[in-house]
Image (cartoon, rainbow, N blue to C red; front, side):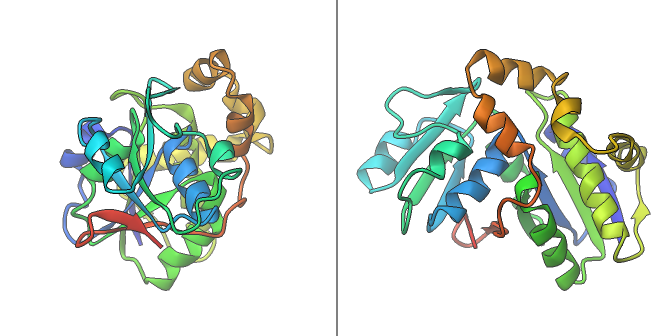
Length: 238
């Protein structure tokens, strides 16, 4: 398997693995973690949006509005971007219209991939198993970062997934970012939360009192779902 790690959506269009590839979009804090939580809580589908403009119309169509900007729930949204909130909600059969600062931007940027999955520490093992079952030959891990900049937590996830795949199959790193991410992950020697306490987005979310979300997002294998983007439906499904 060839593996390339993209540290920011701004770099995705200049990737080396541009032909026939699978992409994993990741925004650990919090979009892709929240998508996993929403499906774990019974959601039927998640419609990713990079704009808030369609939300009122989608609400009239029966969608549950889940939207966030700069970490804060958007006014008039039924919920924000909190995985721990989703897990307390009855989302069985619900369709979410979902827009976030960074994560939905990454998902939509990669929607023309042969396959597009949503990844987080929450579904790390389930995602690895799906990628291996697909017999994936070219994999791009797309980190959402923060407004164009790389971030620690997404980079660490890239390293964790690279290591997990490498333990089961031969992996060839296409770029230095993939190697650096795996080295960073392996340097942790245990406590993911303790290392990520230095991350700027952790500080941002702590100021907004989202400590429970931070801790949940930095736990491994709390979900068994692997959301995927359906190009025909233009939404995330299982």
